[in-house]
Image (cartoon, rainbow, N blue to C red; front, side):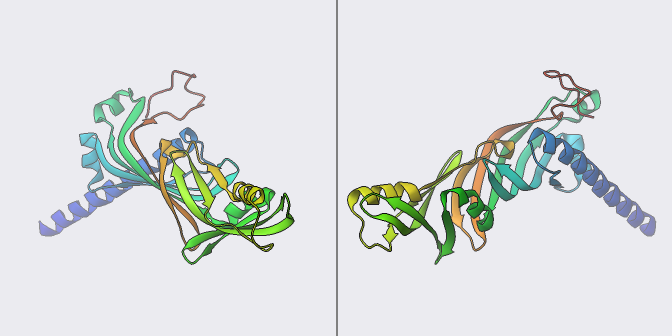
Amino acid sequence: MLIALVLVVIALVVVDRVAARVVADRVAARIRTSQNLPATPSVSIHGFPFLTQVIGGRYDSMSVTARDVQREDLRLSKVHVTLHGLRLPLGDVTNGTVREIPVRQGTAAVSVMYDDFNAYLAPRRLHVAPDNGSLLVTGTAQLPLVGQVSLSAPLRIATSGDGLTLVPEVVHSLAGALPAPARSLAVELLTVRVSLRDLPFGVRLDSAHVASDGLAVAASARDIMLPAQAAGRADGAAGNPGPVS
């Protein structure tokens, strides 16, 4: 009896994990379309056992990792989002009446590699690199009363909900001290503004800091509504998507 009980428990655990993987794979395919991602993300549904979450209609959390996300000509090497408090009643699933899945909140970590950031800045002939825990920008510019000159400045990173602004703190010039008109223009030329609208799941930026390999950006959102049906499917007309299955 003990051996039989152990085998039953092992079988239940296997079934539970397989079910979680199958659901995660189906969710990943729909997230790719609904969030306009270049490839299917990796999805993990947390919490054990999974089947009791299905029956209760409430899921502890789910992690979504998308790579090579393109936003505003800037490549985001990784967007890792953790969604907390998903609600999906089992009755709605079995009846095929799911249209949206409410999520209490989401937190995200966005990684921007320096190579990608510098490719984004290349048209402006600017280059950024880490420097003693800060971020240093260098470039050349044509300034009034000075001419063509090489500039550099440490950057202060400010975040708004939908973008980053990298502001020069002190501008250094190989030409020495800059006259006031040239200094003001140099500050503007070295200021970097990055729009990061339309991130997955509608997360908005909270903070950013300098890491060894790139910029690490934190973002979050509350009261997220996930579409249960991928947009543009042939089996669902616009404005009347088919049910989740």
